Length: 243
Length: 271
Ligand SMILES: Nc1ncnc2c1ncn2[C@@H]1O[C@H](COP(=O)(O)OP(=O)(O)O)[C@@H](O)[C@H]1O
Ligand SMILES: [Mg+2]
Image (cartoon, rainbow over all chains, first blue to last red; front, side):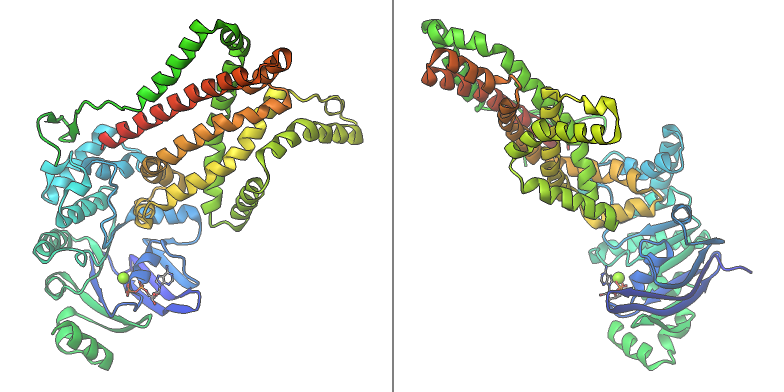
């Protein structure tokens, strides 16, 4: 079977910082992969290379059969890949529903009625249809992040990338976001999730990956990686996270 | 929190506060207008004569300022986007343009466009035998608008640049990650947010441009200032002439300032 994301020996430099040092990874349709690792290890950079928010210097990434090279391909890939950010990045000048419909009408060229219908369905899915006409900054962090997920889903992506989706949230709001993600995983969405939520990883992930200093150090099913790591660096990292 | 008396949840669930607010600075404008009216009524000679003489210059000043400003809004945006572009050539061109223009006095630039630029075209026409170029005559109006636009677009590009850069990087990334291209992201996500930020400085640019438009009087455009000079040359009453010219400019600038202020408040309430 062809992987839906094929990452082959990519390298990324920020000036002198060698942020990714030959990362290779194949992800298959329907898989949920959780990425963990210390701060600065290149997790965000790896995610951002997958939809080319970041250009990489060497190597190749093929997403759903599309090689990332020209600008056209980049936009084609981006419509297939949804992304959820740590800081939500909702559009503050648009209502919640408009946040979810904007790209549908501009990029997918859906008519407004259709876009609104899809938008409302997705807001129901993430559990906040009653906030459709409110502005994002009037919502709690957990609600904002759920809107951000709905906004990404509105493009009918085949893959969803999550970059520390619950790190900016108050503890009591984390679960409501994880629940949405869990439901999405159960529906068979292909997901790459940077997160240190071990509970979510155990419940949803097929694979967990530990990154350190721009490299993948270890890769295993979450239960195995968290309880029986083989690599010393993994052990060290987990001992810090699982205090 | 604002008192909830007039707060209504409109159909959008968006809260609007309808408070009656009177901007007291209008009184200053009315005061200036009153002074002009009183002078004209009680001292028709020379004030009524001055107004009648200068009158068509008011239209010229307003017209030149407004036309230039509309162009400045467009070209300033283009230059501003160049300034934030990662493309080295675009960025370099925009930066050089802005730095050069900001380093040359506007009066000198206007002189160049009116006196030197047409000669350049004529020389080119002569050299290459293009007869329409060789016989090119400068239109004062056109050159004045060109000069003002060329200069103020550079100023305005900095206003746009600052406004766009004040919007967090995450906004552009979120838009791009949804598959929108650069221009769609600018149009639907970045600029609508940036406009709220840049409205005050943009209003400021308009008022400064209005005042600086008096410089076009030296390149044969009959604006308020030039008409004032002509009147003075014929009548030798400098005090009354320049007081009246100053009052007329005040009416225009104070009025513009109020309008800018009104737009600002309106866009704030809408959010
Ligand atoms: N835009 C950037 N400019 C310069 N350096 C960067 C940039 N983004 C990330 N880096 C560097 O690249 C490395 C990896 O960063 P990142 O992918 O954000 O790590 P993580 O998400 O695992 O915390 C870090 O050393 C970081 O400082
Ligand atoms: Mg990160």
